[in-house]
Image (cartoon, rainbow, N blue to C red):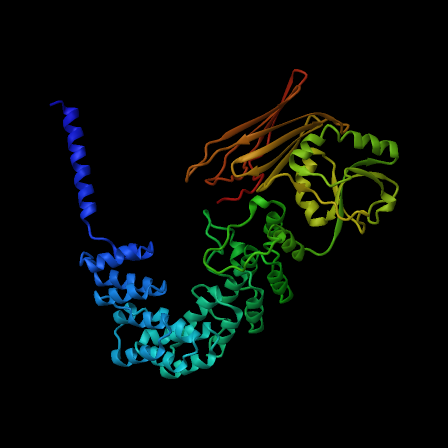
Length: 543
């Protein structure tokens, strides 16, 4: 026999043996119950082929009781399954449950788990069976303490006090339940804990209740804690979201947790109480201006449901942190209408680059008389690219100024008749970077908007008189770095008689810092090279 044939026959034999063993294996009662195959489960019980441990039979019975399959549950009980307490509660058979409780007193911890007392208690408190509830709470010490929390979560403070009279709650246990409630329960539940002596300003596990409430974006809970005197500038030992490398240390403050939580109402409540947001304003602006930079959702608290305006929340949040200040983005002009018109015409060559990055507001760029815009120096005709809140225009200014050197943001007390005209990005970029260098009295500028390791790059060259010589654009994919290092990369954008390239060394993250840039320009056969100093050009966002 050939070796290949022997291997084939051996493989078939192994597969056949595995198949026979699988077919001969007794059915799993839990899997049958989870998949709602009640008929198969009953047949297996009747045939006595259900060789499963008592714990598995109990789990299957509890699933059956929850599904209302009481006939199947009774057959599982006859086969040795526990879970009488839960099954009686699921049928609302309170008198029978009281008898069962009296007959089984006291219970060990293992028996309490088998009977799922922790799941029985919410059913009993919801049915307003107060006497039975206290009786069940006394069956086992740990159950007694958790019964207090269950009653408080149901906002039945009177019942919780009855249970406390039966089994006083240690201070440490009280602090632990409050910590959990601050992350998961309503403001009313947290307020109820204070009636039992819980300190709503407590610091436990390296953080405070106010941190958790701010991270949840729960305005009602935040106000309860502020009324109790919570420290609005406390610093947590833990980051509000899971990221690698670690999030900026500024986010460990209550203000930072509120920023990640994303509720403008919570931020306003904290600001009114004197919370210091000065160290996180730049982060708030970045999230508002660059949708791709949004923080991941917190995973250790119950966040509030997001409204239909979820996408606008970062912008609303930034507006809370900035005073109302209108501004215009000036990108050219002159002392005469003709000079302003010439400046506006000079933007035509830049428009493809501008619209690669931004959605320009309707009716812009446009020429206005500076005399008609309070806040601008009179006597000029200026070209405006946008008119909006100052923080918004300052946020996008580095890119605009790289494309159009000499631009400026000016505070004004004026708004176009049609309303604010902000710049918005064409895509969900994460951040921006830009630089400008003098090249023999000319100005070379480069601008980039980033998505992960990819950047949209535009380079421009202006002569000493301020006229655009040429421009180029391109898309650069930097790829992903290893956990320890990133190799130097190079990108090149080319245009007529012009080339620009950059090199950079990046830290170990998918959205790199730009550490160093080299720009090269070629004009009429003359090669010019300019090297930037070794400095941080753009701070990246690492996942």
